[in-house]
Image (cartoon, rainbow, N blue to C red; front, side, top):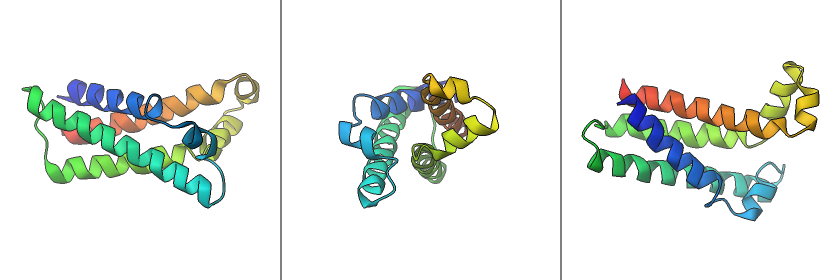
Length: 131
């Protein structure tokens, strides 16, 4: 069941991060002002909605997906909260500084670290959902 749940969450993540993310959200989700927080929270809510939809479809269409509503709710809160936190950008920048990745950061590495952090958070959610 873990693999099915992870794929469902990953598809929801890809949809929310790429075709469903507005230019405004992408440009402002890390800004330290009300506009930035609004863009960030709206983007994180899009992740929660797309992942909830993917999980719902999976629960109906796949034989190996059985969900507990309280655990699914907790997983969706986790997805929204971690996505919002990671997308503030400073956590990724701090990680890259600590890991001595300044050169990689200067050449586009932050986007890869960002996506890796998001996928790790999805893996935790899928593990919790399948336990």
